[in-house]
Length: 108
Image: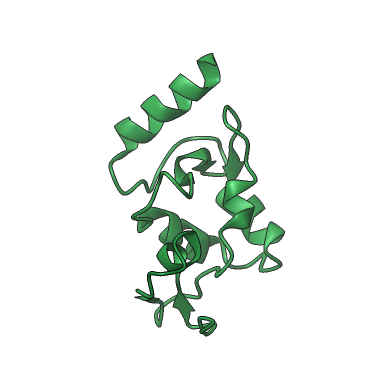
């Protein structure tokens, strides 16, 4: 079953046997996490850049919300998505951890 436009299934896309959908009735959630996965280790992209990549340039807040609620960071590296000015924000496990992950990847 494919998620509707008003639902986001990051977990289901990373693990097809899971069918847990996160309600996104307040915001429009990008349903394809591949734009986030495409950001290479050691690099970052802004929430706006990701919104543009998925064909929804006005969905910046939706991308930020999806990243902030991402429960499977191993599969979808939302720590690589930052504010337009390059500063980290909105990470489920805290900005300090996001900063540490970005620093570690930059050193590789």
